[in-house]
Length: 107
Image 1 (tube, rainbow, N blue to C red):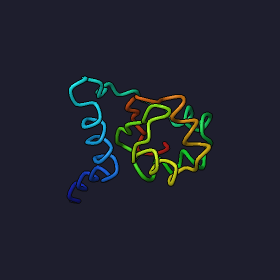
Image 2 (spheres, rainbow, N blue to C red):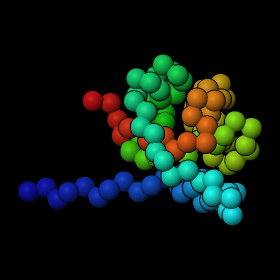
Image 3 (cartoon, one colour):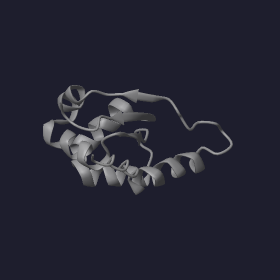
Image 4 (tube, rainbow, N blue to C red):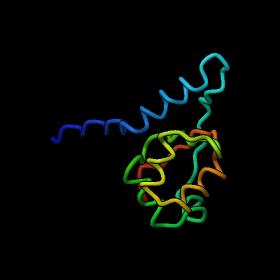
């Protein structure tokens, strides 16, 4: 009988982004804990299949705190590195200041 696989650890950049969001909004209560589930099809349409696949590979199965447009947060740099500037800007415009759940993979 096979032992269950250990859960994938949360990517460090997501943990860093969550801490940064809490620190930036400390005292004003703006850290959003609401999580919006976004389908892979929606992401494909918004940012393209290649960028979606890169997000799934990097952070599938976790929520991604998307910064608001105009906020210069470290997670924005990571998202740009993962999916490119144009796709990152589309993602931020569509889902800024929201935690989006990135599905773990394609069926």
